[in-house]
Amino acid sequence: MSGEASISRRPAALITGASSGIGRAFAEAYARRGHDIFLVARREDQLARVATDLGRAHGIDAIPWAGDLADPETPQRLFDALAALGREVDVLVNNAGFGVPGVFIEVDWARHKACLEVMTVAPVRLAYLFAPQMAARGAGSIINVASLSAMLPPHAGGTLYYPVKSFLLQFSLALSAELRQTGVNVTALCPGFTETDFQAAAGGTVESVAIPRFLWSKPDDVVAACIRAVEAERPVCIPGAFNKAIAVAFKLMPGPIARYLVRGDA
Image (cartoon, rainbow, N blue to C red; front, side):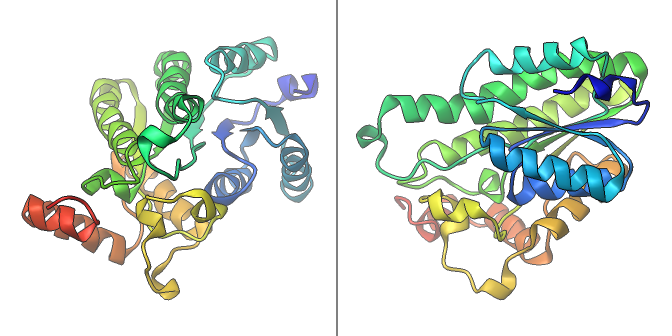
């Protein structure tokens, strides 16, 4: 991170998984709103290009920070790096994640562990680190990118993904209730069919279902809907009428039928 960022008085957004897809769309959206952007991802070269593009296009500080959230110490190192710059975070977007295709017992444990670290431990740790600063200021937003999968029954091949996303949704709702009186808003974003790089490696998730492309959302539209939800202080955002309809339908239908429809055991 560049020390130049420490002199800025602009609000700041920290976005994990920021090098592409929904994460990059969040970076673009908050840069347009005049936020400095701290971009976190593993792909250092791509992250640096995104930071350069954002800085030039919007006249803000866009600071890349290459780190692997599968390492349990990465959230603390990230927090310490910002503290060394004298910067606090106004918007935290926990977006990093990946799917784990395959049968649970046939996948290396290291891959499962990385999934749990990136999509459960890291978001909770980052919220734990940055929420106290927000609460002390009486303002701030935490966005946890869950999934429409959080509202559907799990099935074979989605052994971790569905439960992990359900955890993120429930964690967000609980944290929202706890922080409501502090001025800090917590929103769980639950996108479904979205045009990103994720689908290529997301076997066994709701995003891999054969849905006509015209029903898929674009990352910019997903992010715009989420930011509107954040500004309205709504704890859950399901972008798109089709995805909302799916969430309602699965909530109302009997469990055996729901499990059958997502290729589970009826």
